Length: 64
Picture 1 (cartoon, helix red, strand yellow):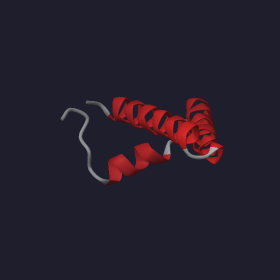
Picture 2 (cartoon, one colour; picture 1 turned 90 degrees about the horizontal axis):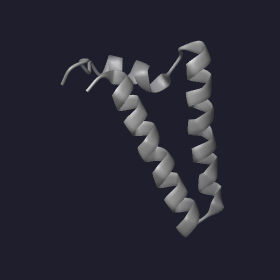
Picture 3 (cartoon, one colour; picture 1 turned 45 degrees about the vertical axis):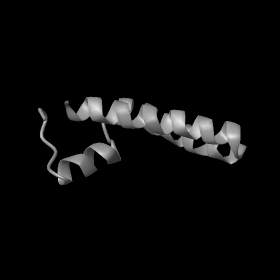
């Protein structure tokens, strides 16, 4: 799985988890959803993605 696919999968999991937590516990979890959405949007324009940098530092290869 490529780094880009890992990032998309992670973002999807975090968004779905925060939506479930917001539904069952507290609407404050929607801030996590907003943060992930904003990070995805800024990444599309700037090319800067903290998770990508972290995965590269952890030495994740492109094809696993």
